[in-house]
Length: 80
Image 1 (cartoon, rainbow, N blue to C red):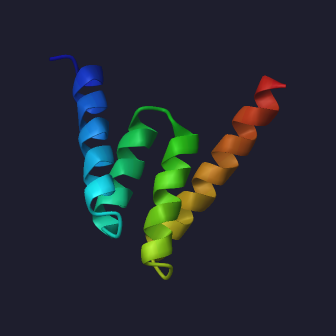
Image 2 (spheres, rainbow, N blue to C red):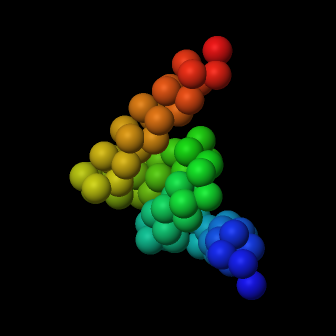
């Protein structure tokens, strides 16, 4: 199975799991990382933001949210 297909399947699995257990910090964080790997910063931002809602004092995720925000802003500016 190609890596891209494996990544898509893992994203789908994590999305299902977050629906089943929406207050699971680790699932949201993992989903965010997989979405970044798949070059989907907007969706990664959403996933990491959900993780941050669960654990607002998590510095690592807070830094990643800031990174995603900057990445999204850069992509929007460069597409104009």
